[in-house]
Image (cartoon, rainbow, N blue to C red; front, side, top):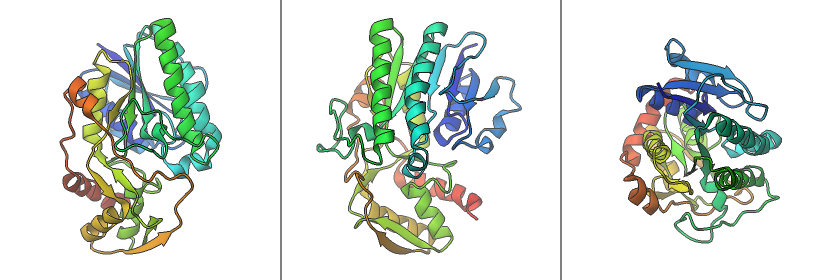
Length: 310
């Protein structure tokens, strides 16, 4: 039986990946320090024979007995509210943590996929963003702790591939949403839903003209799985290219929930003005396209938030 280690397993994306690899008939080892993850996301897996969990910080030495075939490194705070509160941990998990896991992959002769991000493009000067764009990042700005950590993660992953011949994969994830997002995540969708459900002001930063491209989590997981199983070692964008302004998205949430009122706040420093992936490479290389439209995906996510927002 194939064995896969998934770091950040109790987080939003990590928990959905655990589900997918269990469904693929693999033995899944989840690892998380629960800094931003929650055991409630994976508690349904604990009774299963082929799931085990390690409460561990990957910034420290990583060891799991037995053979490992695949490693997916998804441990990291991923929203501005988190990495602004935890800048050192954010830097460490994508630098020291990635170094530890690459060394572990080398020892185990395992293939490793690391979760990079659209944030490596910073506040982009080209649109849409393609993998050969080097980005426009402020290394000392408030978002630099996340952006530069992920850029270093990509660099050290490529170094291990080139120097040690390690089998590596790099996915650049664009805005993703779906069930199990944290209510207090701080990103647009959970913020808008929780505020609307509570009949609070819907906080829009700037004039709301900045754009994002939202991908449903099931589509993202499919793209990640295909990339892991491919033979391609350079970065690949995975995201939904359907672009929408934050203001229009807030209005969609208000219309769906049936209540809410807009409140405008100053735009945070270095907040990207446009975010849209060029997914040509994923289409050609992986045969991947997002299948869940925003209307369907947001409706499914709303059903989840209705249960968890108090």
